[in-house]
Image 1 (tube, rainbow, N blue to C red):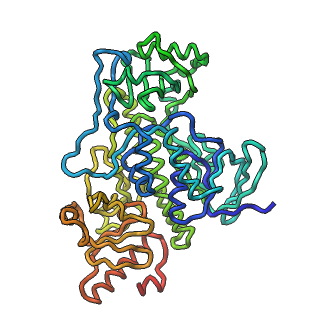
Image 2 (image 1 turned 135 degrees about the vertical axis):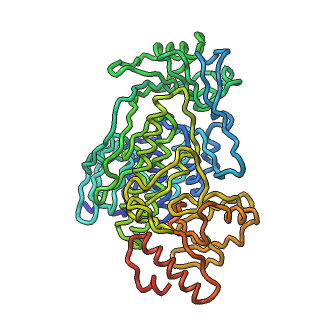
Image 3 (image 1 turned 90 degrees about the vertical axis):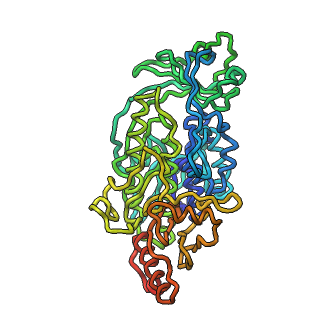
Length: 525
């Protein structure tokens, strides 16, 4: 049987795999996505969608649809009380009003996974058609020279198909068969907690009308709490289980647990589904093994306290997609893919540390919507504007060089940082200038091969003024397709000689970022 050929095979159709598919479609990369489930997740699972993930969805044209599928912004709060009818409840965590100008055009929200996945799947299918295959399982794979040979099976008929892919991406969760097949180990503790999660329907909307929140923490020890799906009839009740405890399965017993926790002995409860899950804090020892790469939970298992796990995975997809596209198109050396691990693995490590600390302080942590705006990448795909202070800061340096800042996001214009959001005309943002290729923002900017030119002189006066005031600002910045700054340098000069020199510097920077040797065409640019 002739194998189906594809540049990229994505295994896993959750939020990370679907986002990767959407991004690859936007870059014009042919790919195949397979998912063992026949349908999207029936259980809410992840719920928090961070500001940075919403920026990715904005770039994909999906931000408004995702927002419509989520909870209203004024419900993104924490409730604490003995039960849902406790008259002495405390409600905290209202969205903070930023000082000065907002740092993002798309604040985060609560949109549970069972509501988010259909939005992503509809668009991914519209773009990739039959290349999105739910109900298809990866049976096995092996490296074959300059690619990967995989065997797939239809979940219904068992019919098998062979696929030859240049690159295999594992987005298949914490129990990743792709990771196992590559021999990549997970490091870190397991069993930080074990929980029963119950999906249910109950008429609680009127009960919580004056205290509507995203999460309802119950202060009775061992009682757990409720997670709002729609703050009306759709809910999750979650409670801790002992390491060896057998969870109840009888619907009547489960309904009794819900009534006791809610403080409403006559509450009408319908049990929809249950899920037992374990809180782990684990990180893959590597994100790439030859032609195999990992993203999302396959690469990092993040405690859900803080809502950063899925969002870290969406950031993985955003970082990896443009690099895959450049390599597949022949515009970058395969070494560019090594920068994916160099940039994203340290971010996951810090996110795990923050989330693990939150798990130990469940009564005090808050949702940090800006945390994933803060990473400053250091790798061979970022060229420092000045000589590095240490080897760790050099291009291609160590993990310690890529960092995020838990103390808060501070807009800055420097290599490795996210392009700051500045409001432009008609509700647009500087973030809307990003992609699908590279973008040069500079006075008198001139386009070069693969680079779009943007002159800040065309912006509203307020945006121009803020751009000049940004810490670490330079005359010219080169923005990668994922919105992070690849390089800062001199703007094209007013004379022909100055312009030519600036373009040569830009072309040299592009060659460095893409891990390629400069060609004659690059030099002539």
